[in-house]
Amino acid sequence: MAIEKLAGLGGGAANGIALLVSAGIVAEIVAKACSSPQTAQLNAKKRAPTLMKWVHIGLVEAAVFVAAAAIFDPAHRTAIIIGGVAEGAITYAQYMHAKQAGLASDLPGTEQW
Image (cartoon, rainbow, N blue to C red):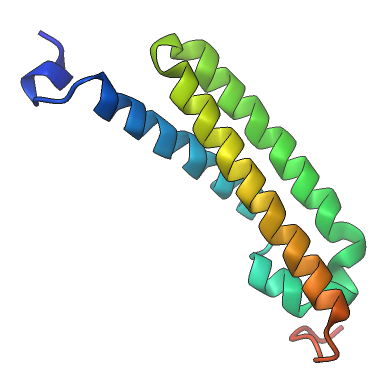
């Protein structure tokens, strides 16, 4: 008997876990490629030229991992893709806002160059 059946978990729980793992990996990979949106906003005046380049690289890297997970786990493919796409869109929107708000701000950044 499958472990999820013994634990009383159905496919819905496994789909939820797959969705969270997919969303989490997108956030982790983009965070690895960039600093946080907060730091990006605080230092946008100096980081803006490279910020979105690294967000895009992180999203491409994340998409490769989400696609691989969807291929390797066809039973949870939909949840994996939904989680990855949703978190990718949210993360992209956060960094776009951080860049725009930071460039529009008159406050000094936190980094000294």
